[in-house]
Length: 235
Image (tube, rainbow, N blue to C red; front, side):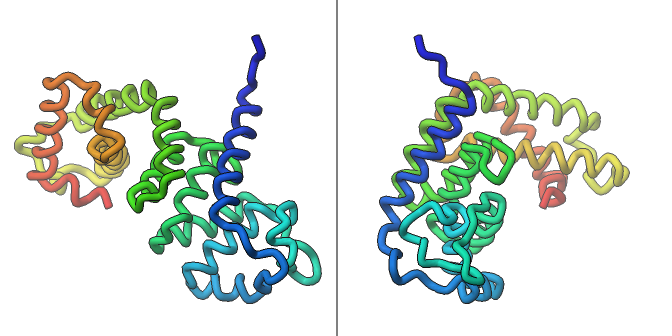
């Protein structure tokens, strides 16, 4: 039986993502834009330029369709960290495809710390716009991370209840010290991130892994925290 290393898996993931992207982005060879102009436009906040700059850095000089892109007379060099930076800017402005690229980078650990959870997060954003490759990649990664997601959500809920160490029925967030507020903010942000994930279209299958009692306890805690002013301090 052939053993596949973790590194090999990451390379395969990145190859698959890159192949999918190439199908959707054919046609630049011979008439590519000037790098300096793209960079200037991206720095000035242009959405498409930020996305394009991310692609230039992701693929570098190894992709035929962007060999015509030059910077100071030299082909653009592959730089995954810069690619992630510009994809993030484009994604935060609402670009439909940038989240998919970010998801691929997180899944493969290219230019960012490898994280299937982050990959799922970004795939979800693109999937919400009907991006089929994102939907497919997200389903695959979610299957791989099913156990981790459930354990993390359970752990976060338990940690939240323990760390609060107060009666959420009667205590207001503003009544406790700032040092404890910081700790609570950190924990609650994770709690509600996973809560929202559990309720999304592709995530509800994992929410359903909890017993009805666990779900009810979580929702009661959520409501109590909301009523007593905790949630608004997370952002």
